[in-house]
Image (cartoon, rainbow, N blue to C red):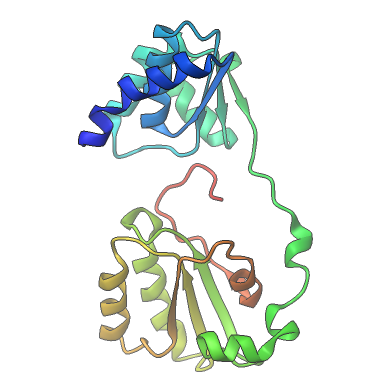
Length: 219
């Protein structure tokens, strides 16, 4: 909280020193701070990128609407994010453009296990013929990993060689590991931790699962 409280003066100081023509911010708090700072520093172009629909924080939409006149252009990561933002923040659709996340699909054209089977076994205990489903996410309630583990436990009886690879870290890691243990699947649920980049882990998966309770357009 304190770092957030002292952010505006620091940001204003940086802007006045750097004197940019454009300020482009991402996510709600940064967007709000950037709008106020850019206005005070007379920066002519201010861009706010909206990456997620904050369904559980209605105050965000109110503050967004209150400061929307300070924004030159909104960028939304999906059509749905644009639709909800325009409706709930009362923003003109012409002021919001959609730019989706770009993905280089050629990165995932071959299996990581086929190229380096020994590495997969050593790191995660995944054999060359194991069936692997997985996800890459921050381990937070919003990401729905708890429901993924519950579903995985149901599938294990039908697919005994099935593995669940969870890539990422966060505040719910211990809770999720305890849930896997309680369901008797901890030997088959692999918490790989944060991997940057996570490409190798993605290439180990036969099936990628996105169990999020809500998203804008995930990375």
